[in-house]
Amino acid sequence: MKPDPVLARLAAMKAAPVAELKKQWRELFSEEPPAFNRRYLESRLAYRIQELAYGGLKQETVRRLQQMGEQLDGGNITTRRVRADLKPIVGTRLIREWQGVEHTVTVTQDGFEWQGRPYQSLSAIARAITGSRWNGWIFFGLKDHRRAA
Image (cartoon, rainbow, N blue to C red):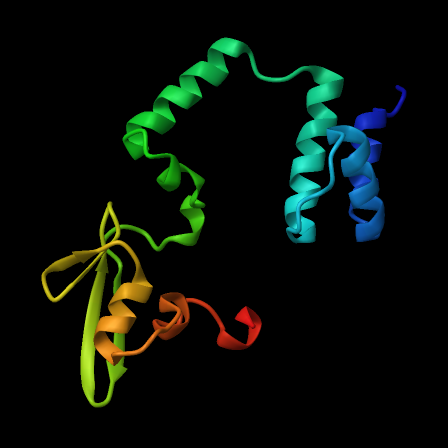
């Protein structure tokens, strides 16, 4: 049995330098690659290679996925663009001590809740707690401040 060239190409991506992945991106997407990490480039390239070789999703499936997305985010394009895997799971409690006072934030479907009030962002809550501008993800320990710089 002859080896599948698509699988060989996908396997070769793991050892390819990022410059090669970006070159493949230009070839496959006819545009400059985004400034995302290697894992993102690999996953999108792998999908595109398979899509071109084996065919993409049926239009009916694409429409259905779009409808499901609109049901989940209420048609809010901003919500749709925020990566769902970045936000903690609904119901998660974030606890932070600030100047001897413990603050608890609950992750909600629409954002966050602190002291019974809804907030769109953790940064707004961090500002309310500290009185100064903070990156909310760093303030609550969800992002390493050294890597954010």
